[in-house]
Length: 534
Image (cartoon, rainbow, N blue to C red; front, side, top):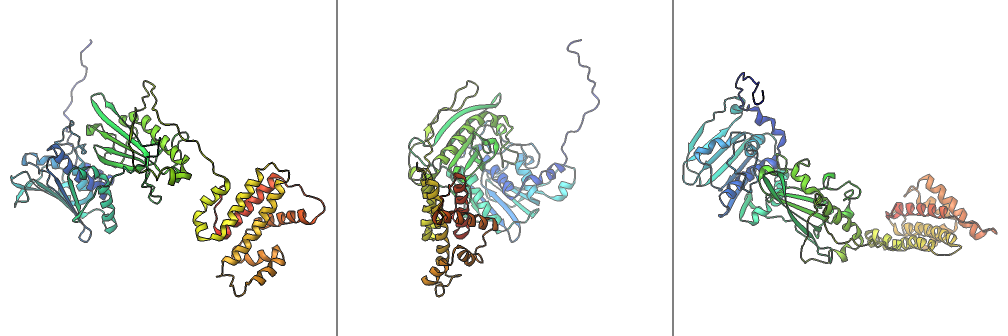
């Protein structure tokens, strides 16, 4: 019969979680993520109270005694709410708030993950000062009851968390890395009046909006709403452009995600945001390293696409799936722009420090509305000689005698593009002469292995009069040229001599010129560390 249940109740199952819940997540946290959870808790309470007064968070990392302490003046915890400090899933946060804590377990498990003893002291307004100790003995006992104590008064409206018997030791390098992490992660909150100190050093705000404003290719910004859950709306703002603060060593480009103004991950270069995909951003490479895309998501914490430790993005989350088409388009566009302008960064990008961010409509796959972005500039291919000089600028500055060798290699390409019947013969002679000059320049430029007192002009002239093999024999002990290379050098030397000394004129093919050019380029690389495109 419709509407009649055939289920028969057997027993009521106890759903109380076991204490090992805490221990099971220790591997999810390190010093950075654990500290961030404690800072998040303070910022959330400050946010819930309106964020009107300044917030002070003092972090102490005592690497000598291996003790961590985080103290804040966000308001303290009322006695009636002390259970929130230990009960998994219990939280005073309301979904309507733009908070950065969620799951109701972050601060609790972070403390346990960092150390075996967690001492929490708190005072709400001018009420009693209270303390709770989370110990390894309490964790080993399945009883969830925990003692709270009244202690001598601490500052009104403050909470401190002291963690000792650390599970992982910290050192000075950890402290320095934590400082940089705090600067970046909480930069927006610092600008809003949140003061964070680490070992009494004031944490400053790190911003990533260091945009260049090349005409017609200024940064673009788009804002739109998404609904990962039917009744949970998130607002997304994506800003993309070329940057002025490129750091080749740190590779500080890619995608940056903020959730409710807290940095979640930076310098993201993975397939899910468009990298390693042909037709999108492609393989991460220095020629695309001026592209930066900043994604800011605001709304209910439980609808955010972050991972549970708030240190990454869940790419299968519905929120990310909905914003991805717009993100991919911007990442692909500015990565391609960076590549196309790579030979003119100084003049076409870095020269433009000021301008206006342009607002655009987002991509909308449902109604097939495409994002309108400026047409990318056509790639201007540099002449080969100019490309070689650009590629070897540092080497030329350090070894000015190499500029003639580089320009000669560029001239080979220029000669081959001329409509001359004998262009291959000219190119071969030019290559062989450049090879011989390179040997001479190497001998002259290396007084450490060819003393000027011995290798005078007369000695060098006599050496070259003895023939090519004698010169190579002089150089080989210092720069061992591979036998396969030497075989080809001999072959093309004989071919060149036949052009000069024999009655019959040899026909030089394109393949031979290309091969000898590769040989000479390899020799120049070995002698002077010059660079040539593959």
